[in-house]
Length: 157
Image (cartoon, rainbow, N blue to C red):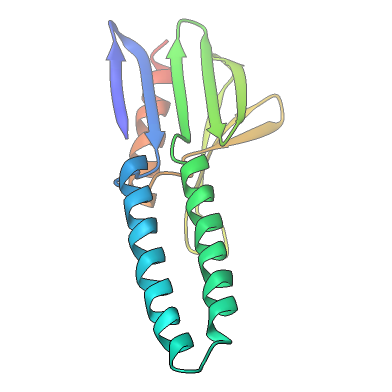
């Protein structure tokens, strides 16, 4: 989570990204290592006469490859909220999809909802009867802190 002021005390920008602790090269190296170990073990079993293990090892590696592809596709996902002058801008990148919402600062409301069945809070911006959720990459404590800071920033206009 990055949080920066932008000159004036009323301006605010926050970018929330997922934890991408393994680089693309690191993911590739880990996948190749697991692939080599799995096929070495399955080849050993196949040479010992248990050849039906090879298709299962191949299916397992295909599933692992697809999981690594999903992680790579979403490694750059982020959410950004920016408060500038009379606007509140919420931008969300999920894979190849980018969604941008713009709100009037005077009418935007910050909603922090704990009334969910899963025990986690929900942070959203409400404007003209619709709500746009924010903070899927944040913990509950971080959502609470962001909600408090956003309320102060929006109110101090």
